[in-house]
Image (tube, rainbow, N blue to C red; front, side, top):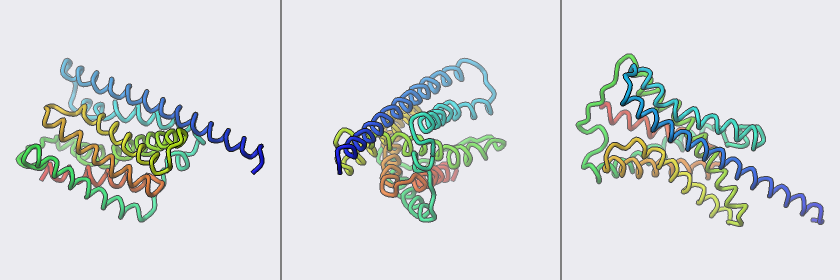
Length: 247
């Protein structure tokens, strides 16, 4: 390799690191906006009488919209412009198998956590009131279809990849960089879900369960190089939780 080739490789590595840093900044801004929006919306709901359907949709939108915008901005402005290339947004038939297996596994671990903290799994003796007119959205569309897609694209597609790239740019070995990306992203994923906690016990369960889901999906995304399996795993985990709650 001659000097010009070495310089070109150095420039490419520097550009990759810079783009990864920019994507992390975009993601961090989106998370701050989402957190502020969640807190503000919670205050508004407690202060003003708002129709239940509006409460239901808005509670999801205040999270989904900032994350979705961040993904688009990161790919269009600080990436190649390809969602497939930059985020690993690909599906293969084997992802259904891997995703189902990992989804069942992380839900099982979450059940163990719930039993250890509460003495029961989610749904045991819990009345889950759902307006029949909106049950399709509350029980299927939001937690099983849209939520896992948006969250996995943002966390495993955007954030985990950016953290991994930055770690490699800081001279971390490939496996170490991948591990840092998986764990760091799972922690952020869990912290965002912690905002749903209403008691110390709930906080512990949400934090550990969400971290488990984040680890499972992160490992799957890192091993396959795509997020199709992670999306399936997240959807299966949420779907099993819904089944436990309504059964």
